[in-house]
Length: 115
Image (cartoon, rainbow, N blue to C red; front, side):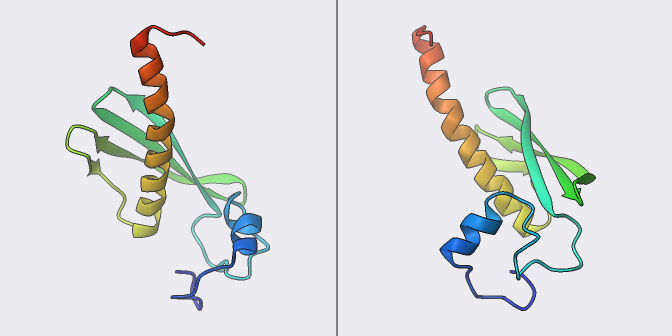
């Protein structure tokens, strides 16, 4: 979705070197005018059925904006999502990763096992 590169996919080396770590200043696809260099996500509340996720936009290594998203586990959908589809996709990926880490821990806790 980078301007001038719509419909094309970066190669594996580009993804590994630039995309995975956030600040992709060496990437040729990086738009000069942008609102963020990186977006960070964190779960701020996990009430079992309700998750609140905070996101922070960073620009030049400084906070440049923030907000919260809410996911309802009981119906499997976002109660409050992000209006930018790119950021929403990142939130979906973050949620998936968080839930993958959360589930094994919940199983261990429910059996009374200790690590």
